[in-house]
Length: 363
Length: 252
Image (cartoon, rainbow over all chains, first blue to last red; front, top):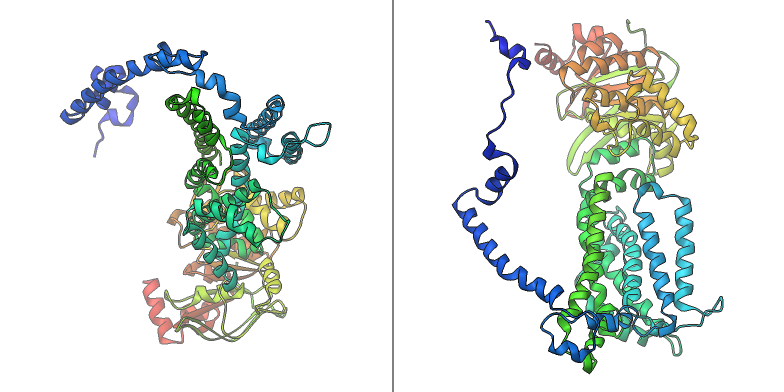
């Protein structure tokens, strides 16, 4: 059998460029927007609506809008009244924290965001970073609460706005994750008592809405405490959020644990690793990686759920925004106020999901 | 290498009237087996005959329900400390390698010594490199298991067990998940291990391997050891008719 000579030396075949209509801009438009009758119609309809919507929206946001004016001027303008934000941003962001002391929650937040940004990079994870967090948390507490270093004390009932949202979210999520992992391990435990307790906990917490947990923490829980003993309301809300989120994390992590082949457990055990070592070194690193996408979904929804603390009278950023809108002179500008609020939430949530994608690639 | 007579250095594994059930299914029915230090045993038999289960009982990956298993002077009971001690003494190589995919080859090899034997990392890495040399893949140390071929992964798995400096090595069908051209590289490593006098229990159908290195070949069927003999006698003159049938099927 003889082979055609051009098969043995592929270099002899001249490269031919693909047809012009399948590459470049034209190719992209053709294959993505106009491949087939249905998609062509869909493209044109979408384009029509975009033309209808986008220009007026831009006019409203940027061109006809007022950025720093009184509310009376705003009422006669046709565009957005961003003045509600510029006039009230300090109340929206910091709530009832004493006006002249608001640099303190601001610095606490900058400290927190700085630490979070540094912790983004896995190569920065070290003992030093751990100490930095410990020190950072201490200073954040001092800045918020005051009372030492010559800082005027501020009652936690006066905390509010974005720092409160961050406080509930960051500590809620940081505590809920390890608790959730423990619950997931507990639910898969061979010890019946631990398994049963984990199942009861997870199913009970998942069976009630967060709102009812928050009510319980705010209204019912204090009834069980002895006279005179009170536990900070924020702390109670925090505990409710942690308990709630942990139950969801637990189920997601359990899914990840089930995805690990039995052979991994056997290999670890046959090396003589004990249960804790097997889990910590072999199983959890693999399982938690699998469940990054669903965990981040839970973390994002938990972050947004912190806004439910309004129902027990805490002034998180949603409540301070609503309170601003209750002011007669700024009444009616809710579109602008909630647009601003949405932007803040979006930035936070988008950052989280971006980071999770990065982490997924790195691990 | 011709198998010599089994060494008489004293028993390292003693199994006495051992039974195991999976639910109602009686997998192992009265196993009696004594293995001498330095002895090399190949176990063969049809699938479902209990041969894998038998060696998995030796390091307690499976629990037996009746009888006794004594490994290196320690009886296997529910005592978790004893189990962990025995597991550290007994190396195990699996059919599907079971390397840890999230760790590099080097980390796969050092994790046992560092965490179980509490050996300093630097020293553990030195030992690991020594064994990687020995299985001829030192240059892959920084890679991850997924980047290696099946044969290479199995050699890493053998090296991982050796890093624990085990007294006994168990092999559970170490070549049956490999592409044919990779079987030899793994068997070569096992043969060189045999030449150093390691106590080995190998579940395998590699009859060439059995002939060249085993002191004894066991044939298992229906959860029992049907026949136990030297390789020559086993292959030339099988006593039991089930053994004869089995051999005729695999040797064609």
